[in-house]
View (tube, helix red, strand yellow):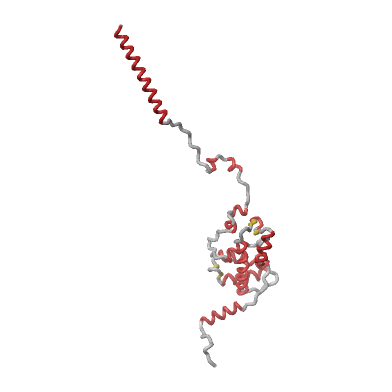
Length: 238
């Protein structure tokens, strides 16, 4: 029998067998309750530095499987490969969420963490994108955590951009919608820093008024000279 079709033994065959094992790992049934445990845990793993590029280190999947198995009365019997496979499913769902986030005309209801479309637009969009129905007009659990584990960010302290910024509001505006402080509203413009202080009014003489003043002074001086001259002539006469 010819050996031409056989792969040489080595490190490549080992990696191929691992890849084949992952590909052949049977899918387990994941419930919403399991996702509510898994997604926040993977977000913590990302913050701990176990997210590399667009995936996680093997350690994160191993620990996640342990947490899932311990979190439910009936053991889920999940292993690291099951978690890694399910992570691919979560990423596919996240791509549908991104379509919703990028949709023109979608509204963001921050209090309930919900993307909202009007009835007619909602029906039209869902007909074209059936999977997006999961993310529209209903509260979204673990939204920030999903963006963290499915996005390109490494979450090493730099993951600060939030969903609110995408819709033109800050975190505080999205979470705490409070009325402006009364003291700030009653403050003067200079105290608020919204307007520069009023410039004091200064009277400035125009060139015309200056010339008028000089002319009046010259007339006055001329009159004095005439009076003095007249007094001198009167003295000489006496």
